Image 1 (tube, helix red, strand yellow):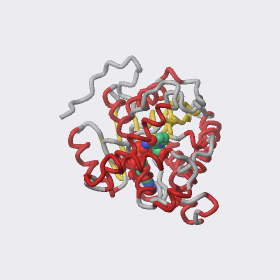
Image 2 (spheres, protein in one colour; image 1 turned 180 degrees about the horizontal axis):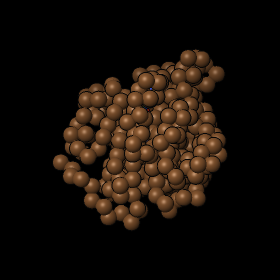
Image 3 (cartoon, rainbow, N blue to C red; image 1 turned 90 degrees about the vertical axis):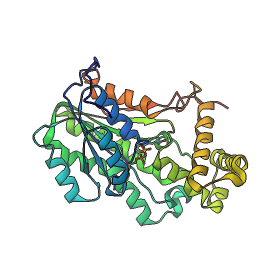
Image 4 (cartoon, helix red, strand yellow; image 1 turned 60 degrees about the horizontal axis):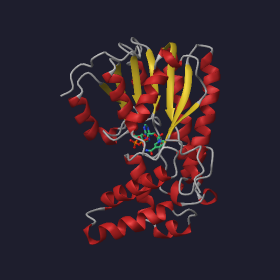
Amino acid sequence: MASAASSNSGFGLEGKTVVVLGVADRSSIAWGIAEAFFKHGARITIGYQQRFFSRIRLLLQEFPGVQGARCDVLDEQELSDFFARLEQDGIDVLVHAVAFGPPEVFTENPSEVSAEGFSQTLAISAHSLCKVARYAKPHLRDWASVITLTFQASERSVPMYGTMGIAKSALESIVRYLALELGKKRVRVNAVSPGPIETIAALGEALAFIRSPQALARQRGELFRSAIEAARRELGDKVPDEIALAQAVWKRVQTAFAAKSAIEETVTKEDVAACALFLGSDFSRKITGQVIHVDCGLSTALIM
Ligand code: NAD
């Protein structure tokens, strides 16, 4: 069982109040960030969707110092209750690691995605940062840091990321406009853009294509297609379930991305958490409105 965090950081995060939205389970990037701040002596409150509570309960039992509460970004009452609990302590760091799109936003080309699917994806994955900022604003301390999570498909059109890439473009623009708005209060707003990491959301994307061979066949780009074919060949009749197949696919996707990166390594949630520690610390006080890539140089290299 994890005991109260030891404070040894040098980041100056001891006693800081850190709020992390978007924990689904131990694999979540949000949890990687929460755990890192906890280990550096910060006081942590995580926000989660009720549908993940059975997994969250295990984390809260293991880390009794971490607080947790429901916070669905589409539910105004939950948002209001969640942020009301933080009134006394104030907020030094607010992490938004929230995204969702129905399978069609990945499997269909943007011109075919329904208005409902498009709106839902943009509402949860982009506009929710504005909403969360609205509820958090009264509690944000001087020099507080707001951090969101994006992906490089915001800047380039990436096959099979589809409308989620459009949502990430909107999210990054929101980062810049919120930085302007909250800069008056000396609050900074930045995004971290990681390379691929195996999480529930990531596996969901792979599953969408595993379940829809027609969608897979009409997409441009070989990466997912060859990863799925190779994983099927490798596992053959031994495939115990779709999740195992999605995990095998995802490992291949990570390896393929690493081969196209300046540093030929995969990115972990701990790598992302290290960047979040910096963005949450006073060392980054004058950095705002930025997107910081933690991707081994995937977004800057063009390896032919
Ligand atoms: P994850 O599945 O662990 O986290 C996604 C979270 O979004 C979940 O906790 C889920 O509960 C939450 N969420 C969805 N709808 C919500 C709603 N209505 N209200 C509140 N929360 C809601 O997956 P992750 O990969 O850790 O994703 C975290 C962030 O990192 C996302 O923004 C994702 O796009 C981004 N990201 C992930 C990767 C990757 O490869 N995993 C790469 C780049 C960026």
